[in-house]
Length: 265
Length: 288
Image 1 (cartoon, rainbow over the protein chains, first blue to last red):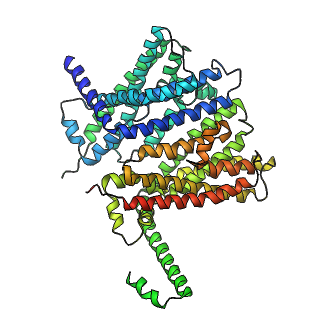
Image 2: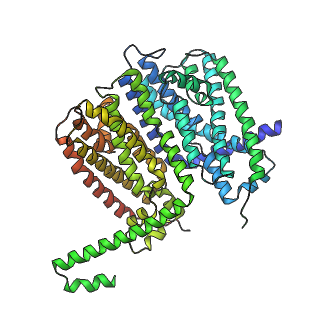
Image 3: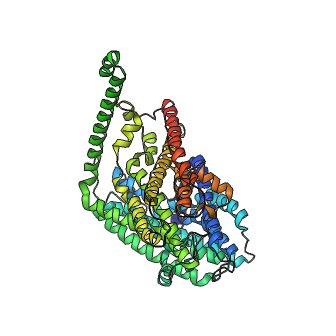
């Protein structure tokens, strides 16, 4: 157990450190993310009725967008795991990765998790800081809200990486994962609630989205932060999805291991 | 080269025109050969191509689904109905689609810089930009065009029946698609040219292409004036769709709304070409 935790810590640290090399390009992307946030905040300001809708006032939606543009840097944006896996399969390097005395899924999960912590700290928080001035983001007073929101975010990051891992590992069967990446990106955007509260969707789609793992990437962490939902049931559902995705990912990994063909050089 | 030198001494004005016409014919033929080779390569897996285009068309429409969901719940935005916005989205998306179809390699230009593949373009007997664009037609990016056409097909009947568009408007809408495509090309080319100095441009593309592309899917009236100004001048993708459509769809403006993009888009392309030429002179190979 101690060795596993140490392994996780070392790999996550490496993932974090690797990202420090691309500071300049990350600054440009952070500015772009601020512009995206501005676009959505202004669009929502234009469309929301003065009385708001449901539990959301106009100001609440601006805060919702601000939180999501910040936390998405941990749960959705900037993930490199798919490309890393497909390049690894194409180059044959995957054979070495599979031969290592480290679980393949945990190796990629911990490395990516470290990278996403970097993204959140150096990119997400900067975006959040700028947008919070416009959205007049309020900070929760209750410690339990902070803990609940952070726990939900941690689970959301795990779910996001697992989903990307499943797309990445499809490269064992097909070298081209662009279409599946598109599907994942669109499902995250539509069902995750990144740019709109899920209540805006038609009722059947809203229910589907809320029950899906995608809602844990943006919608639920924001709801907990804004104190619109209690954390306990959301965290339980998030942990259940994380467990399901872990089981699926490990099963698929074990099949992929048997499937692998490497072109020797 | 020899052919060009030989033609010069005897060439009067008609000779120059004939030489230019010959060169143009040769360029068109070369482009055709290179593009067909690229298409043959991509169409080897025909079913995969059709499947991925279909999926990308359906799944990549999240932006319009977002707009649709919002308008369905809250009604018109600043006087723009769901059909007006669908037409705005259609023109912007089709412009983007035409750009992606013919200039797909500009979108992947970072790889040329990082891997040193640009070296291979320098030794070809054609301008680098010509060879680059002929290397890969973005047939696998047809989804953008398909989404735009679908949105136009949904919006047009209603806009015609309510008298919002009619007569010459169809022609102006097509012209707007062309202006939009030219502006996408200008911004895409300028962003790619930045790669000659900074090498990695993927993150810059998010800022110069993706963000304005998303923003101009909505009427620019929703943004404060400084942001609106940015999207019609510095990152001028809004100039090709929002500015003319404002007049065409009776949301305000004058006939000048049709004139500005017609004047500005060729100027933007010219400026981007100049930047490309300057950047090319600064190119340093990464070495492969």
